[in-house]
Structure formats: C-alpha cells, structure tokens
Length: 575
Image 1 (cartoon, rainbow, N blue to C red):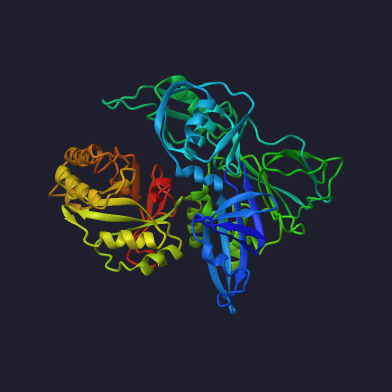
Image 2: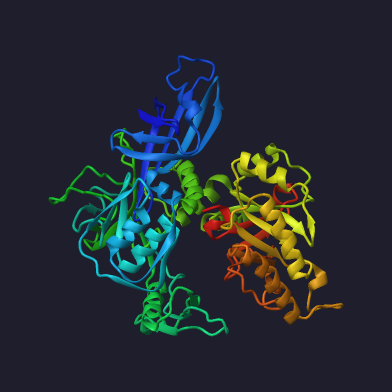
C-alpha cells in the first residue's frame, strides 16, 4: 500500500506491487512501483489514484516514511484492466525548484552557505561534524539550490543524503565493518570488473579569463600515480569563478581520476545470513568485506542498493565499488538509465548488474546490433535527447510532439528566426511541445552574417514569447554563404565580429546562456567559439565529440525530418 497526494492536497491510497526503493550515495532516492486498475469500475480501489498520476504528485512509502515525486507514469492495457508502471524521485529534488539569485564572496562558513541555499524552501539541514571555512576566490551563488549543494559538497569536502525535507551532511556517510559476505556461504561467486579506460594523471587549467583574453591564473597538476600509469592527460579545465593559483590547483586535483573503476558482483546474495558476528547492514555508504573462496578479503563500500520494503521475500540488489555512480549525478541523467535498468531487472535473476552486464544482456536477449548498443550507451551517458523544429516542420499538432516524447525525446529547440524572418509556426510549436510534456528551453537563430540586425530580429521574437533570460540562446552557424573557406567568402575575422555583434544584442537584454551550433569541423575553421556552450554536428561518428555540450547525431529522427541531439548540460532540457 502506498499513499499519494496531489498538488491540491487530495489524498488516496494505491494498492501497488513491486514497490522498489533505490538509494544511491549522495544522490536522490528512487521509487518504482506497479499497479492495476479497471478504468470502468468506480469501485476499483485504484480508480481514484489514476487521476493523481500527474507530475509533482507526492507518493509516500509507509514502511520507510520516504516521500517521492512522480516523474513518469506509463499505462499499458492488460486485458480489461490498465497496468501502470510508475517512476518517482525523492522529494529532495524539489530543492531544484529554488534559484538563489544572491551571491557571497571571500571566506564563508558551511552553515552560512547552507542557510543561503535553503532559505525560502521547505528544506532544513543537519551538519554532523566540523568543517573548515572555505574561501571563495570569486562568488558563490547565482544558481539552483541543488547545483549549489553539489558545489558545496566538493568545496567543503562532505557527503550528504536526504531524509525527505532534511539534508544530512557528514564528512563520510556510513560506517566501517558493517557487513561480511563470504563466497559460497551467504554469497555466490564473487566477480571483479576493473575499468582502466578512465584513468588520468595530468591536467592543465586556467582561471578567470580577462577582457584581453589572458587568464587571471594558470596551473597544472601531475598525480603521484603518474609514476605507475605514466602521463595521461585529462581534459583541460577552465573556470571563470577562480582567480588564484591555490584554488585552481586544488580544483585540478579533484578533476584527476588516477585509479581504476572497480565493481564487485555476486551471483546471489543472502542478506539475512549474518556471519562471524556481522549484522550485514548494507545501508548506502557503509564499508564492509567480501571474502572470496581463497580467503582473501576485499574492502568495499556500498554505492547503491535496491530493496523492497513491503516484500521481505525479495532481497533486492546491491552495488559495491569505488566509483560506480558519480556522486554528483542528479535525476535528469539518472531517469532514463533507471527506467531501462528497472525494466531489464524484472527479467534477470536477483543480483548485481553493471553497465557492461546490461549491454551483454540486451545483446543476448534481444539480439540487437552493435550500433543499437552504442546508441543505448550514448543515451545513458547523456542528459537526454532534444530535437530541432523550425518553419519546415509543418506538423505542429500535439500528437506529433507526444510521439517524440514516447520515443525518448526530452525536449525541443525551436528556431525562432532565420536571418530577419520569423518562424510563423513558433507559437504552436512551443505550446504543443509543452502540452506533450517536452522541455522547451532552447531557442535558435539561423545566421546569415548580419550580427546586429539579425540579433535585433531574434530578440524581438524572444520578447514576443516572453522567453526567460535563463533559456539557452543558440546561434546556428551553418549557411554556406558565411563559410570563410569558400568563395565568395567572408573572412574568419569578419565572421567572428558579426557573431560577437549578435551576442552583444542578446547580452544587453540579459540573455547570456549562449550556444554556438555548427558542424564539428567549423569550430576553429569558420569561427572561434566564445559562447558558453558548444553544440556540434557530426553524424559520421558514434561517440560524442570532445568538448561538446550537445551533439547532433541524427538528421532525420525516426523519419520525422527533425534533427536529434544528445545533450550533456541539464540546462538544455530546462534543468
């Protein structure tokens, strides 16, 4: 039994099954469940609950007292009934509802920073332990509360978890010696998987960029592990919020990943069979031991666990390792991965599953092609998929956008103008996309080379539709007429100037989330990108282009005629 409450305060129970909670270190808890209803029977115990399967409805799991918000509800006909599969995230995600406009500088206490990001929200916090003050070289603030919490965790060096509306902060979550699983006793065969592909040992970085193009500070860092692994470059780092070498060097160290990713799995786990005095507390963050058949102990930490609070016969699953999940992953990235793993999990034996296991199972069970597997991996590694619409997409009915959502699209980018001509379909496209549940936070202009004039035309459309200044402003730099490498040509310097003139018009009106959108080969050849984000077009490769914030990988998404792109920044889909 679960309890749901909609935004109006109405409440009703749900008779549900397979209610599973997934907890992940320093991230939001997840809840998934399934229920059946006869839509023609008003006496059905779930008849009322169906009408509450809408965004932001709160679901309470009574055994744990945990509260969740509904993310997605997927109904499927099963005979004369409808089966709903529901995915929820912790109410902690409501922290993202709050945008902190204020900023602070210099040395701050953790308490002062937490007061700042929780002010005006329903959240409180509890700090366990003592944390040294942190000196911000520039400013802290001007962001969403959940993003700022993640920043504080990195700056002050703490871990956190949500107890509904209470944020618990500790230097390290969990305790040592909390469990012991022995191969052949209370666990099946212990397998170890190590990934060396992510190791880096060297990085260079720059701080705030000055008006003349120089940087306030520069630094480099070499990990001691370079003596073992050699010099392996990490992607260069740059931050406009850092102005001193010490802060930059500390940040560079945090960007290095000088150890292999390790995951441990077992064929089966008996969580109840305690050995040698261990109570086997597998709470997220706890440390314990795995002992193989040779008597060798491996110290591991619980990174994630899934359990069934209302079904004691279902032991659930657990993931151990040193970095199975990035602690800073939030729901926008987890949503698709969670749904696909949950769907697959119903068909697998209870136990642990890694991404490689997931791919192998897909290939074995569905005989999908390697290209399809790579698409699944790309999707899991992104924040979602967006498609572009412009005046050529004459189909603007809601069902067209709804079909995009059904195919896994998260949001759209609307081309408002081309040169100085407005897209007459924009109004319908924006309205129908929103009605279909798609995010609409990207607005583009197709550039023809007249920076100021086209900027004014584009700005007029942004203001016409009351587009917030937090939206992503995309400049599409593709037209052959502005190709500096062909005849007749505009020079690269002239094109850079016209692009700067375009963005200047937008910046003066408060639009600063700029994005250059062009062929991958155009970056650096046609123009020098100075926008906040880079959206690269390359349909010839199967993996994300390096340094891209978004990647257009398809020119005809599911035969709709729309361009499709993976995005790697939450802001593209309104996050």
